[in-house]
Length: 165
Image (cartoon, rainbow, N blue to C red):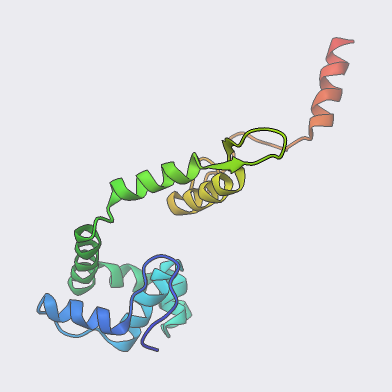
């Protein structure tokens, strides 16, 4: 299990071992390497800890301790430094998201000249990725304040009509 398919940044066990040697720290355990690999696939800290073999009962506490360990912070910083060396930084990612969210395509027609039109499929996919990446706080993890019940548009319209009568 040297390489695990990654949705974000592929992290191999070899790569993690090199990073720990580079910073002069002790080696990562096999479990710690697995946690890194699962995190790079987009799993939550808790899910990664459980899948790597940590006990379900202690996964929350272990994940907090795991991320606070100096060796783990150092390895993460080394990976960030390498990404920045090749030009992948916040500015690059922001520029890419802007490019995807304003994507256009050529619309060809036999009777009209070709023209650029918005590529809505690409824009929607980009927004979905962006929303997942930043956890779109307006819609996630916020209880609806003061909402007792949601109503449909028809119910709203019926209530408006009753008030007008």
